[in-house]
Length: 332
Image 1 (cartoon, rainbow, N blue to C red):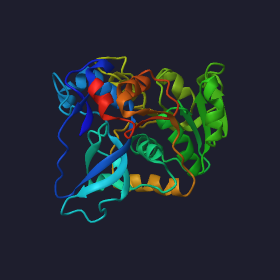
Image 2 (cartoon, helix red, strand yellow):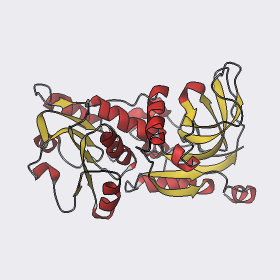
Image 3 (tube, rainbow, N blue to C red):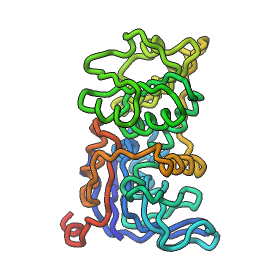
Image 4 (cartoon, helix red, strand yellow):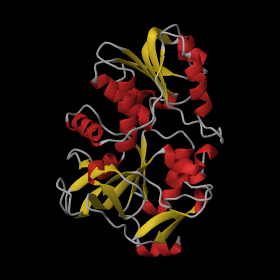
């Protein structure tokens, strides 16, 4: 099968189209014929080998898993003997290792039936960004009537967070650039702040929950925008900090909030089938729609990762598989 593979860390030129063996599946695994995948900032980070402190996890000198990509949508090609929820031909979406390929293997519990009202590209955009947004909002116990602010509301996680917070009944303020104001408002935000014109940390408003996807304000300034018992969840990767990324900021937050009635709600994503099912239910109810910034053919996987790595993508960036032809792979 065709896949995009990296044998070393570096910029996008470390990725190459290559023929590799089709993945094998275990008793409880599903082999997926991939129709679409989507790019997360983590794909760019692992490609680059950043932060350095994570290299023991990724691989000391090169990635342990040479094929990038976790978000996937496609049709079931084959199932293990213990799989009961899916059969060949079923349309599915979820997460796996190595989705930037024609075929990928995923655990049965990492998949759900694709919502019929989504394209494969839209479905592939959901898993990781959607679960981060959902779990972050849960960390803040967001509920009806809460005042919520999403910093970086037009990005992959932000576009999901705005919609999920609205579905929970919150009053949502989105922060974004001028060109994205209309988009964020269309997602249901009650208020939209253009950060090029207004600094929300100095505007005098306070919020019960802040999801910070950007890390462009100090923690002290963010605290000023929190209510007395509000929760801040920091989610900015800060991969420009090559050694620790956001690690230093998280340690600072632990200390700064230690004796405060305000809460510092840092968390690690824990992908699980229940949350994937919850996102699917919101999608089928018409309360959640993935936003696709661009869709690249598989042969342009490197460009897709580079686009996300620049940090200005609107919503999610998808990769579609059918556009990869044999002659283009040979030329790659």
